[in-house]
Length: 117
Image (cartoon, rainbow, N blue to C red; front, side, top):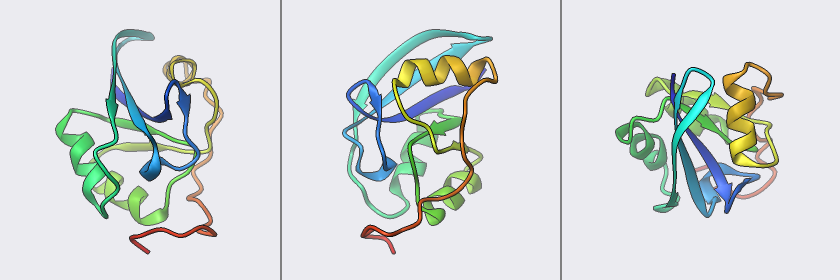
């Protein structure tokens, strides 16, 4: 099963991935989380985070929202993007693994300022 990153503010899913405080990273096996760690966000630079997470072996990113250019870069790196999610990061991963996560595939509406837009 995939290694999953959740853009977070502590243990909760952040509204916008690029400005999250940390990423909760979950190693999974079947429908179980076998390891988790929290790493600080290394900084929001255009195109950097998808590559950074790919190098960590991440295959899925979960966030509240994300801009369309970031979604495209994640997709180009073979990382599945799951947006429109809120609440507890660990609970969201468990729901994702069970195929029960309520999500949206819509990018954020960009009504707030992004450095890369």
